[in-house]
Image (cartoon, rainbow, N blue to C red; front, side, top):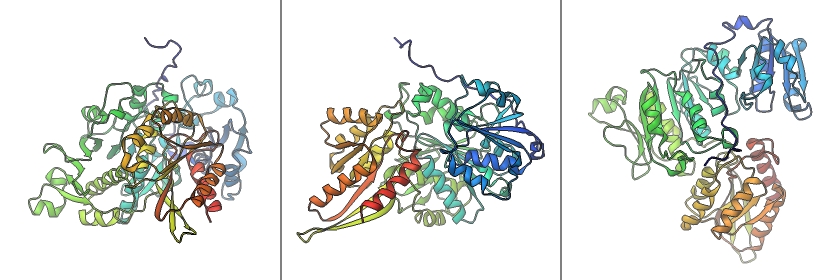
Length: 527
């Protein structure tokens, strides 16, 4: 029987079709509230865009001026902005600001359901909805639970290296409003879209991506949604307004981790039945003959099978039914290879020659905060042995499955640093990966304190997994690690990977701040 005290999922807000501003010129003279200035760029980009086009802007945020100092300073020091039309309301929201505004620009992290301020707004837009309304660019949109940022970054890198004037924005902390005026019908735009950003597009019919990718779906943000079905419903919005001339790229492999209490172990099959676009699948093993998409062969190469008219000219001219579009990669991890394989598929659909795709993506070095190599530390022991410790920052791993994969990504035991704040998820995949993959079991584990760490500790204790900590902060954890390294006598090369598998709230501003602080502390301590 369901718990009567269990929180209910948020009620979806369906917005009017279209945009409050029909033309960019309509922005001039309007009174607009930007709700949530933040530190990740979206709020700041909205302020800049609106001021540039003549709006009267009121910025309201529950954070204080001190907390928002970097963003406020960035705006105040820009001499090209007319700040006479800019007002700040910080540390609070006032209902009359929302009632009197012509339009409110909403931060995607703010829940609409039960929000009296948003309920008072005459119209609501977001930086993403404004961009999609005004741009003519072909959109390549990516959502999912993990692998989004790596996938969009690899796509963007590949397109640029292949000669396209491409742009990258969205949840990857770059607002597309920053490059709106540079886009045209020939400049592909790659957008990473979170479930919250998609929810803010519900009903608008603004998102019509030529190519949509949904990466692996697993339970996430359940402290916000309280329902796997509600979470997935927002993900589905990425293909809601696609047509038969578009492509939806979906997971083919079953995975029990996808369940989330729904008894569904393959969301890709659900999505494939619903989208109006042409369906392509991705898999870790060979796809059935009747299924188009990409997979990895026994050597790890990426193989692509498409309808004949979409295959490379070489394949068409030589009677081949497949193209090889991925070979050697610089970045580690099996899960990363699948992300890059989807990027390779996008390049194939965009007409890039397979051999060029192999060469380009083979040089891609990954992105910041995703298994990012950034530091080496060499120890010479009295015994004469020397050991090189290579440090990797995987702070963007905010779900347990991502941290679990990080323990196995290097094909050898690692020194595993983990832990953080809970967001209503089952943390057992981390302990499961460690206990079931004994060949690559971490040589040692260090844990930051936090509510997610508390759950991990219970799982670790049940599985008899030893760990150090929990530690109060990065400094304490890293100094303990250094003492242990210096007291041992090892040789060769060791990997140290920081993959929290949880959020960062409380100890850090966000996962990017967490990653930056981690790198700074490592460079300070391991010299």
